[in-house]
Image 1: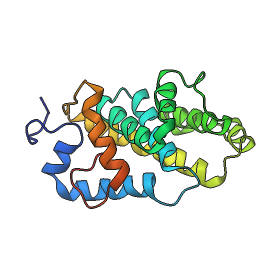
Image 2: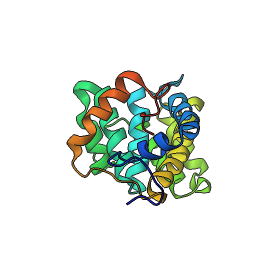
Image 3: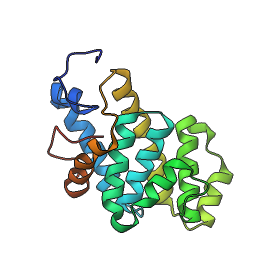
Length: 183
């Protein structure tokens, strides 16, 4: 049971967003900018960073929502999402993606954990300033989103299939203009 009154049966961040639409507007705008705005990272990669950080934070709703969105956006290559979430080190991803996810993991621990060597590794693998910036900001923002969802003890479906419709909706339409968007 959530720590605050939210609409019954509404999962994760959706309940607080429905209850507090002014907050939802700001959070959805942030998610839209980070996950759908201009970037040198693909939308699918940005959603994967969100899912990965959410997995590290043990936030069931956010991890499953953004993993489903990333799968939708990766299309035929959707299997990469589960590979990364299962084991980043054996996942069939580029060195660039692995280096950026390593930075995201360090941000999840605390921003000061990111070291010059982490950034140098990402740059050597082809990451530009924008990719590094966006990775750090997505990781930091999802720590906040995860704490919002879990700090209010919101409900999260346990079955992965419950997230497929959310992933398809977010993949196709993004975050802005809907209180029912997820972050």
